[in-house]
Image 1 (tube, rainbow, N blue to C red):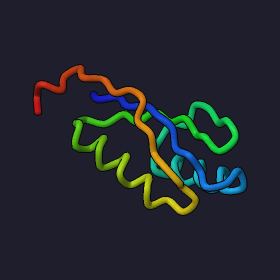
Image 2 (image 1 turned 30 degrees about the vertical axis):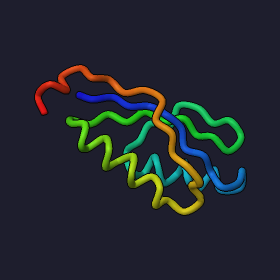
Image 3 (image 1 turned 60 degrees about the vertical axis):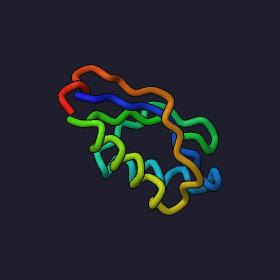
Length: 79
């Protein structure tokens, strides 16, 4: 399992609720919210799946930027 965490920056504080709802609907764990910043944790089987998930965050209405701050490399040698 590959774990990745980071944060999504919303365009405006008014967009946060909708962004959080969309992330949770996609099975993403939201661990903290600080103004426009939404901290997330993603758990996937491969690095490719993690990348695809993070790339998809950019398509969420109200998202300005996506930042990756950590990812595990455990079992990444299988790819």
